[in-house]
Image (cartoon, rainbow, N blue to C red; front, side):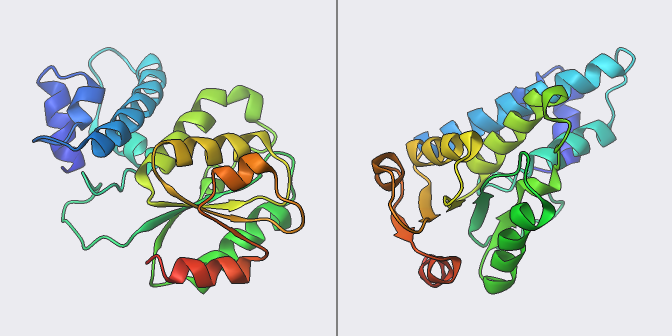
Length: 212
């Protein structure tokens, strides 16, 4: 479904969350993913509509929401043409209070190491460092949508992080494959919700190469 088709459904009276729903029947897992994405979209769209005159929802607003949510699930793709889909990895790890190096280096290295095998959803493209308290809904909605749209969660588990722990738990709970990088002693909770624990990113990249 293209952004133009979604906008047309909105103009014809569909609620935005309903307009996102792909035509036809969905499996239970696809329905669960769609519901998370739709709920996240509704939060963002409501914030846009509060800033726009009544009835002035435009294609650009729809595109903004869809780009923010990175809706690239197998059920629907934000594109005018369907493309062969690679599996998608969500890069799960700490951001809040971290330096550029600590929050970005492992993510960029992963993209290079697995280039051509996967697509990536990187929450650092929504860099809210220093503005977290003013963007709570956007941060959570965007991260939940990315997880829903992913096939695999790669967790940087060496550094304690509330967000990382919750995303790992949530991803595993909705059936995503979880690969975690964590050296030393591993929490039973982290081990329970990870399909595999790797001592380094290099080891994780080798494992993920077999999941492509």
